[in-house]
Length: 243
Image 1 (cartoon, rainbow, N blue to C red):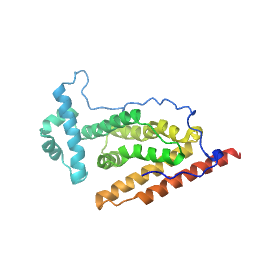
Image 2 (tube, rainbow, N blue to C red):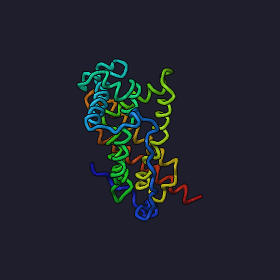
Image 3 (cartoon, rainbow, N blue to C red):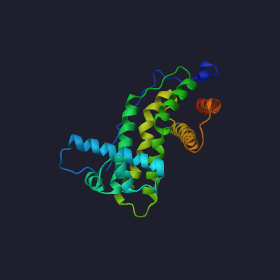
Image 4 (tube, helix red, strand yellow):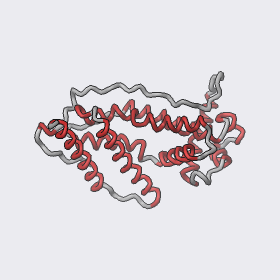
């Protein structure tokens, strides 16, 4: 969908081309179920990837609490003993599902670029980039894992540390993209967080709705969302100019 042009005075537009974009060092997840001191074999890596994918698919298909370890093993075509060897425990497997998603997200962000001459076009581009993560069904599986590991009193301290890491690092990970959108307003952390939370909420809400009923055309709602976020950005810019 082509975003409509925003309101016009040059003073109301954001400077973007000369805005410095900070290089964010992307941390690695703090824990891994990989056995130390052993060189991973090619077939072992293939097995790990297959089990991780099977875990996410089973959770999406049956739900988090209805998915058994045997369900995952059958879908992956391995024994539970193989899963124990690769991941040590069910919790270890779930953590690796999160870590695999984290590594994939880092790679996506490194290659992502925000395009557009107007603020509306850049916000639309940002939404499309965020959708590569938050509009995928696999995100719902990861969300269920995060919620359970964080709330379950039986979760280990290692699991809770991993959940805290994913939460703390997520906003920082997206920072370079928001700098490309906001230009000379990029240092407004409240504004960047507002855009992130609003965009994520919209995409996640649509994803949940589409998992329950047939997806509908949301072009009109999307345009309103873009217009509303652009209005807030310009309002914050005017406030800054008058203080």
